[in-house]
Image (cartoon, rainbow, N blue to C red; front, side, top):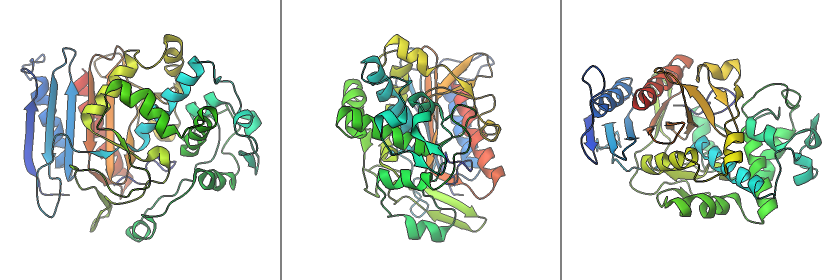
Length: 385
């Protein structure tokens, strides 16, 4: 997500929704509709908005996996969406970064109260920016005040001009430092991709290895997530994948599948199965000591602007808490980039989870952005309730 409520958010002919109950038979909910039927209906409802392709996966407390797809993987060929299609994780990878940082805290190699200056001397400075006043906790929590200036495109022309541009982390931080802070550290909340760029740099400074290598060794290998990959500066995704589209205007839908991620922490692709398994393991306490997981789940309100996307949402340390219509809350971190929009959710005990990936971003109007977000959010809510 960007500071402009998903600057990169993005209709189609469709293949009829395909539903696969991969293990067992879905149990009926009150009122007679099964979880599988509800998932199919919600997936079709998203496609009906004009979204080219949708894939969703729910894992129930007894381990059954329910999968639904709707639409097409390619508007030119009309082919169906594979149930194991890769997509860009985008900002969901912030939870990877936060998990590694908190593991290092648990190992005594970092403290949440460490300042950015103490870990990255003279990196955050100029125009009122002062790394000695910003803590690691504030970077994780989006309360640092650092202005967000990650490159992005808002028109087809900008996409074609910028899609293969490559930036170093130092260049990205330098862009942010040309702006004054949005607010004094700790006094407000403002989503900052640049803050997580800095966290990736802190991981490398602390461990001597790039953050993607730490993520692979500390998260992916232990959990067996072999379909989650760091693609670096490659502009393409592994196969199979759905083509990604972005709607820039009523008559301007562009295939935006091929592009270089703006930063290395965004250069992850995954599948609905792997993303489910990651969040289930995290909330079940398999990746963090109890004290660090508790820190991650200490939340504060998000800004009024982001409340439009996450009603009554609260942000912890790389983790979002959102209410369920049936009572209680769930944990998530959505992502939107390069035409792919992904929402996810897991119950507090890690026993029930859901992921939905949309391969078209209807980013031409605020109304379309919110409509798309609400439909995907409804699928997650129904799956977890």
